[in-house]
Image 1 (tube, helix red, strand yellow):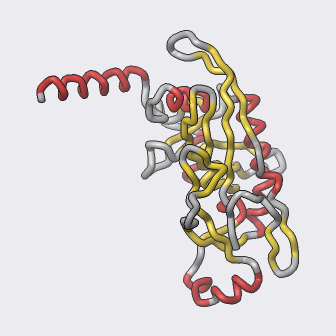
Image 2 (cartoon, helix red, strand yellow; image 1 turned 180 degrees about the vertical axis):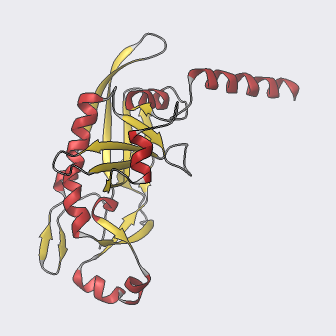
Length: 231
């Protein structure tokens, strides 16, 4: 009933559902920075059990004992911000409970394709701020040939580890129809709303917010400087 860092198969009603296909996936890209420096950046992905589970319903709460006995009830734990591969322990901090979903588990096999797409097209892959959490919660889009009328949405947080590494916590990912609101916002974004993935990563590494421009950052610095001078 855990989601720590083992990526062992989920055992539900005696059937194993592997999740090792989500483990140790990385994105490496070369970025040229504002100062002219160019270097390779490694992005470590850490999918959560949202990729193969659903929210707990009121009915689930009434049948919690049954879900536990089946192996269907999963727990998400709080991960360390500086190292998403590790959970906060001593004691373990539970973030939430979820219920295993076989449909989302099947869809989770699309996640490695998303990683490959970003790796190969990081300048073209669009990223959009997720409404309600524009600081770090982002969404990206993957078109899936075998699902003509659907796209695979991926929601994630980025955290700078050092000058050459970034952690990418995958908050959720699922198939939606192309006509869905969030899909349309990425397929036909409004002017200046969406940014290339590489720009988002560069902003994080240069200590800006994901969607903050260099000009906005400089203006913010000037305002803070003026405020300090007034004190």
